[in-house]
Figure 1 (spheres, helix red, strand yellow):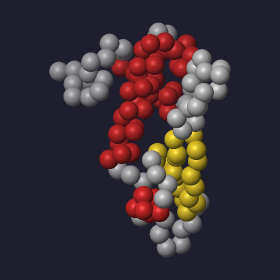
Figure 2 (cartoon, rainbow, N blue to C red; figure 1 turned 135 degrees about the vertical axis):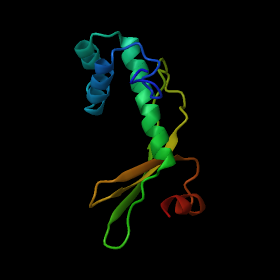
Figure 3 (cartoon, rainbow, N blue to C red; figure 1 turned 45 degrees about the horizontal axis):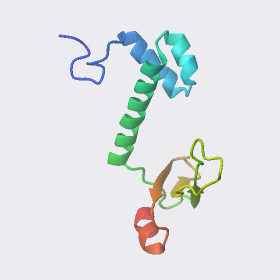
Figure 4 (cartoon, rainbow, N blue to C red; figure 1 turned 180 degrees about the vertical axis):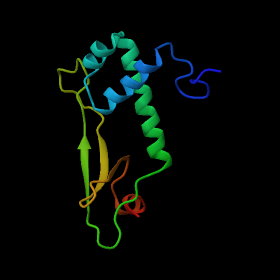
Length: 129
């Protein structure tokens, strides 16, 4: 039986040591080009794996949200409007903006962020709690 059996490595054609190196380089936030050069694999492979690793982390954070604050802790809370002009949009047409709500524990550097559709007290208070 393969050591890959039952893991997310199971269906990959990459050598196991390259997969482990890829995850390590990704965790160091190396640029994709640098990872591609180090591992000698094509750009599509790196892009696919990086997207997959993001999905894994995102799912895990959704299942186990960060809890901040408590007695003796100071938490900073803020909101931010996030918008990006779409490629080829030189005419500055309106772009759908999103509001990002987040908080950070000033003592531990733990944080969370969440895209919100409404920024009123009724919607933000449950998130803060």
